Image 1 (cartoon, rainbow, N blue to C red):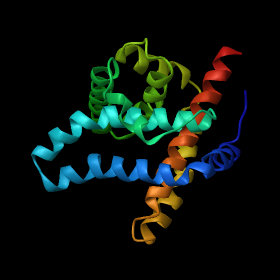
Image 2: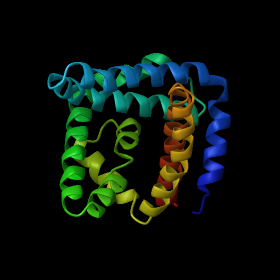
Image 3: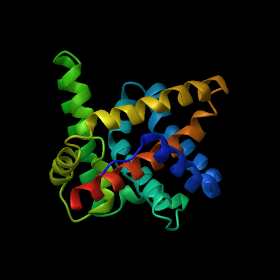
Length: 198
């Protein structure tokens, strides 16, 4: 099944339009918790972030998926990753992804990019299939991304100018781009998953 990244971005922006307020709030809290402690509490901030980044990233994926599926997104979904059975799985998945990407980057950068792209839908898989273990989620992301890594790279590259524009708006604009980016990735997951079932 063929789909356009640009049309997916436009559709995601339309779906997000009634929820920009809560989307910005979710992005703000996510960045505040994951990003700020690293700078304020270093070196302990790294440990703090490592414990929270996985569950919060999963929560952001759950929130974004709800928007793309026309469900009922709400702010508290950001913290769904701390619920059983998600917390340990999301933490271990984030840890494994970080290690694998780091190793890949050490091996001349390109392998790290490939690993990052292949595992890029792990948290959407976990949100969609909570019965899977964290290793199964990693493997499923890698499986469904076969043949879609370059397209996924193109999608993420399309958001770079928007993030730069957000920085020019005193950084506040980034909080608008983050939910749009994550809802679009949720849509990418849905499209890729659909292509694998047809």
